[in-house]
Length: 235
Image: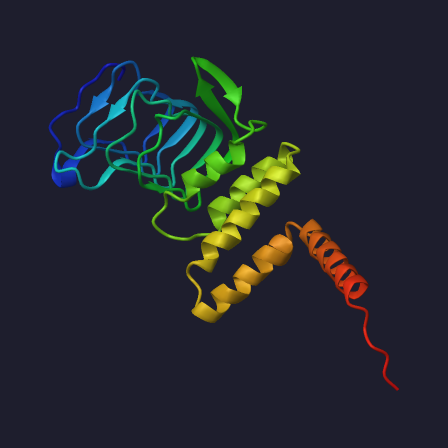
């Protein structure tokens, strides 16, 4: 369907419905423009699913999803769009081996809960590179997860697992720390105060070196205090 233009949405604003479709390759690229929802719920693609250079405008009223890929399965998922979708991208429960994306792939709202992937490659200046290893990789991916309207731990755990498999334990810890900070926003006031204390002192256990910093600071403060004002002996 390269260059196809489904522009008259049917029921509920759906421009293309491929629910439970089974195919080796699904090519929606090279100028494919959908003025309505593209629905791939339960689709199984044994090789390549590509939206390279596509435009997903979503329903004409501006509400709803541009892509619904609930429980979709694919090996290669190329989501390097021409520009960000106007509606939500729903990937809940989807499973892919390789995810290819770029800065233009994601809208303001994404549903990644249950989304499982084996590897991520990012498109930069026309070149495909491993997303892991970039200086701002973890922060960029956490911001992607935070586009979800809810607070689910699974997207954080999935991302941290991918970093661990790639040998980037520091990035994995950053992701898990971000998970705790996101979760803290949903807790009661007392629990949030306790969470802030854990964050500042030991980084929820993911930054244990902070405890050494606090211990050193208290030791230096005590040494300075007692050397300046020696205690008066009592009986």
